[in-house]
Amino acid sequence: MNWKKYLGDKKFYSMVLAVAVPIMIQNGITNFVSMLDNIMVGQIGTESMSGVAIVNQLLFVFNLCIFGGVSGAGIFGAQFFGSGNHEGLRSTFQFKIILGVILAALASALFFFCDELLINLYLHEGSQEGSIEATLQYGIDYLRIMLIGLLPFVLVQVYSSTLRETGQTVVPMVSGIIAVLVNLSLNYILIFGHLGFEPMGVKGAAAATVISRFVEFFVIAIWTHKNSGRNPFICGVYRRLHIPVKLTKQILVKGMPLMYNELLWAGGMAILSQCYSTRGLDAVAAVNINSTIANVFSVIYMALGVSVGIIVGQKLGAGDTEGAREADNRLIFFAIISCFVVGTLLFLVAPLFPQIYNTTDSVRNIASSLIRMTALFMPLQSYNNACYFTLRSGGKTGITFLFDCVAMWGVSVPLAFAIAHLTNLPIVLMFVICQCVDIIKACIGYVLIKKGVWINNLVAE
Image 1: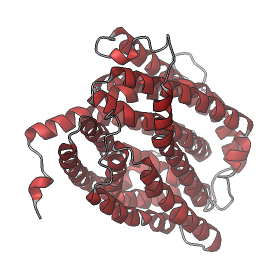
Image 2 (image 1 turned 90 degrees about the horizontal axis):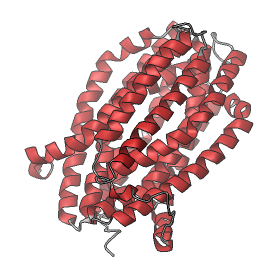
Image 3 (image 1 turned 30 degrees about the vertical axis):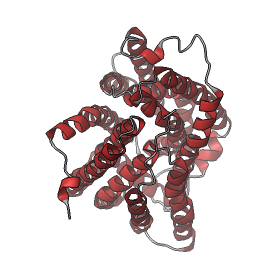
Image 4 (image 1 turned 30 degrees about the horizontal axis):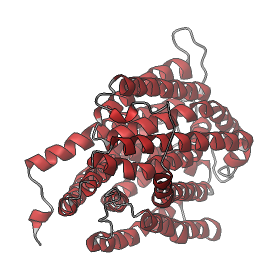
């Protein structure tokens, strides 16, 4: 094997880390505070933790839908910046704003009118501990307040994704750090009732999250507009909302499959969680603990995946196809090795995390096993994530749709549904079987990347 094609020089890794580290720091702090938030809510009891976890699973579908929508336009944004076309970048920014506002309005209506119906999908008998009625009420209380934060969340994603496409990852990191510090401080004050405030429980957790999202939006928006010299795309962005018809069609053709992909993938994940929930509230709580811890440790491969989209996309937009292929090989290898190290660390410390939660020994034991299984699959997931962003960087969103959604809806969802309703297999074995689908995705991803189907300049004209 020619190892040189997978190993870069000091200059290459400096460039990668300059893009990836701020994203890692931002996401790492965000996920760490989310974990602390989760632990604080868990101190109230298993029902509160489960109710919040169910709502967050529903909101996860919306969040990924927004991520897919802005990323679809962002494919063009990264390549426009690589070719020096600021007007084109401005148009992609405007497209993101319009799409995000529409999606936020639709999601708010759905969650407001169907909250009880959606939460009840995850509530099943089967555990010795926990009240279904209490869990439902905690979930409704949390969701109603969280709806206020959907719009600022959308606007933050629009601004931060566009800045990242121009290679500016520090400002989104700083605004994110400020937001999570606000969130953490308000969690302590509002959940438990300090500094003269009454204890608000899950409502306090939701209020803290919403306030922090507004703070994050104001920080990143004010900086972007005050530094228009570094961000020419922002000049006049709200004075004239004009997106060329041709570009709109291109984004809809190339970008919208990405949004549909994220929506269907997140929906598939929600259904997987619903299948896991058939094993009772202890399974819901354990899956929530595993997801929270996994999110903290997954920031490495998630940030490197975003870096693939940015670095490779810019090289494709500049017409440097060989440079794009070389960078992609090295980035994918770097992601796998990094996650092998992180996964090993997570496997070793897995039993420690569930002990932090105020829950039962049954939940702790299940959560420890799930965390260890997550650690074992982490290098594989990092490879699939890098393949996904590689295909996306060249606008091959139709292929990414098949890559993600066929595996999810053609294999994972039917498999999980069958196991949940036709067998008595325990939750950990269910989880492992569903994770094995990633092996199929990795084989397909290897073929697609090797063939170079993703090498495509979308903004040559």
